[in-house]
Image 1 (cartoon, rainbow, N blue to C red):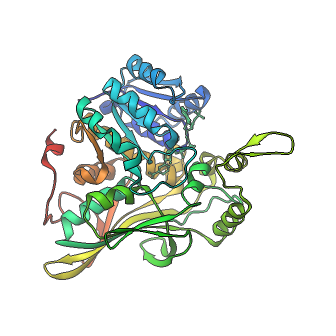
Image 2 (cartoon, helix red, strand yellow; image 1 turned 60 degrees about the horizontal axis):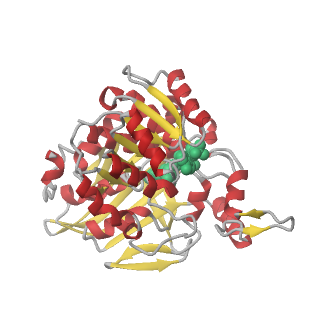
Image 3 (cartoon, rainbow, N blue to C red; image 1 turned 180 degrees about the vertical axis):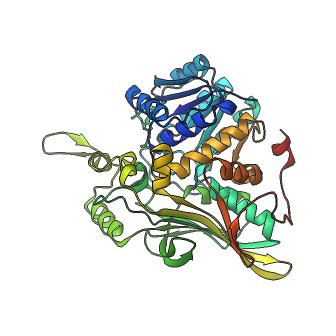
Amino acid sequence: MKRNVLIIGAGGVAHVAAHKCAQNNIVLGDIHIASRTLGKCQAIIDSIKKKRNQRGSGLLKAHQLDAMDVEATKALIRSTGSQIVINVGSPFLNMSVMTACIETGAAYLDTAIHENPDRVCEPPPWYGNYEWKRRDACREAGVTTILGVGFDPGVVNAYGRFAMDAYFDEVDSIDIIDINAGSHGHYFATNFDPEINFREFTSKVWSWEGGKWKASKMFEHRKDWDLPVVGKSTAYLTGHDELHSMSKNLGVPNIRFWMGFGEHYINVFTVLNNLGLLSEKPVRTAEGLEVVPLKVVKAVLPDPASLAPTYTGKTCIGDLVKGRKDGKPQEVLVYNVCDHKDCYEEVGSQAISYTAGVPVVAAAMLIAKGVWDVRQMVNVEELDPKPFIELMNQIGLVTRVRDAKGDRVLDPYKESVATVRVRKQFVDA
Ligand code: NDP
């Protein structure tokens, strides 16, 4: 059993993770929140109290921390007695926080692939350039490290793995589709950190096609999908974290990521990009001031967390899996629908932060209970998806499945499991 959680970051996802940890602190113990700005961490604690979201009697405490400082992070892990670290700060922090975990023995979780501020879009498999280089270190130290356990990456990795195990003898393709059919009422805003959001789209689009990496341009390939609740939706082929691990771990020849964009987003993005305002490279103004255009754009856009009070509508994110079962073609959609307004009422956040914050806390709870305490580094599709899907059904994100039999809530232990390839040691560890 592991107890006491240190949440790193105090943005939109950290806000949700902190509320969810507080709701479940009977399992998780004390909750500590740390970022460079103490006030942001304290504001999250105040909002938990205001919403009465703390169920047990453990500590809720704010800390000031620069998580790029490994020694300071180690000291905070030790002084708070944290055995689980949820890293939901910026993805530039991953390797420093992971090092602090390896050196203190705390379990490590994050929700995005590591980014180097100077490099946009790394060659695949991106995890191989950073995280996977620390695999041996994690195994030797017996440190549980779960990479990319938000919604996408995260839940969609588990959905792909579950669908393969439960419904197919052979899988040809997994299309991950992410549609936000919500409206925030601002002229333009991104749903999470604008800097990270834009960096996803300003370079090559990598997809896994026919067992090989294929490069395309952003907005080059579009497709219309007919999805539950949100209906007919246009999405564009986009590069994304999960492709870099699922392509390696699942043995499926085609894995693609599709993200929904409205015409307005595409127009604004195209203008900003063509003007060079999305560049991560510094420029010097006539006054001699050195600025990074992308950071200036981030500074003038709305804070994603501030979108929550007026956000309406729903998200639909899931995996459309195609292949064969008993020699017949089979098609299954495993998905979740999340309502922006419901999230705001429960924790004061919008659905994009909510769908990323709930899974990382479910994973932390599974580590705390020993179910996912695997004492090595894994991506989500390497773990048994059933306890994860079941726990998320209970703590806020309900998984549904649509196939030839109809559309229903997914009870992962009741669906027929034909080709179980559960790595037993993970479940029993
Ligand atoms: P925000 O930009 O809102 O928050 C990032 C936080 O990181 C800030 O609160 C900042 O606080 C903190 N931070 C930055 N640098 C440091 C540092 N050196 N030390 C300590 N804290 C630091 O981002 P989001 O909450 O929207 O996203 C958080 C993470 O979740 C990102 O990695 C994002 O890519 C990922 N994400 C994943 C999703 C998924 O489904 N998998 C979906 C959405 C987001 P301060 O300035 O006070 O230090």
